[in-house]
Image (tube, rainbow, N blue to C red; front, side, top):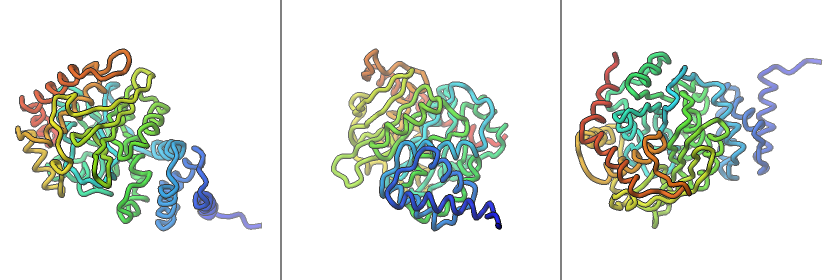
Length: 363
């Protein structure tokens, strides 16, 4: 009897998983790892990938499915060797539909100026107008491929920009589908959880508050020591969530600190900042967003700067540069304002702009 080829066997496995999902069934962690592994290995046609991703979204993806997918991607990534133990990532899921200016990329320059090693993971726009890699290209920041050079940048300049396609080449098998769909899929949630430096500290922006707990669960299981998963709430709009700490309304936080979990609510006033509508930081294409970022680092004031300061202040806490929570897990507004002032000093003193210039230097 003729044995099926490896390709035929893998096709049969994925079809079985796809049929399972199409019935509304939830995949186990192992089944999800198998399904995403098959996608990453290039053996699944794009039409099946699209059907799979949309079936998951229509039913609602589970935390076990996310964990399995993350394990599949991590096992295939090009990782940095021996990154600093205190390195941090500030990265959002994207997919919130608001098209704002690039906040986490700007925060990276602020943190680097303050001595925090930032292993910034990002991508080109797949479900937004301008992703981190698009804006960095517009700023003249080269995206380096050499793992050793990236490691040196992280240790010596406190900043390494890691473009997802260079570290997750297997993700190319889903990139076309994601771009064609143009909507949030499980891959958006996977992105911040597969940092190539395997950082153990992260400020993660999440585009749906219902996913805050799952994001922290996965990172905790993968060894993270301090995580803030954040999701801003924008009252009065159809798409009310945004994947960053916002001035437009309250920000919901699920925090992991020293093995303990906390749920927090942040308001701009706690940081000494004024509220502002989300339209105040509306972005455009890469060139427009890059110009706004550079203007901010050169001293421009306004809601964009304040949003960056708010996010940077919380990232400083995640990086261990301040003790923002009291013994009961409540936010200390006075400390939050001190951290905002620290972030502002990095901009006003020219340190953040210098970090950008160093990143432009290819030497």
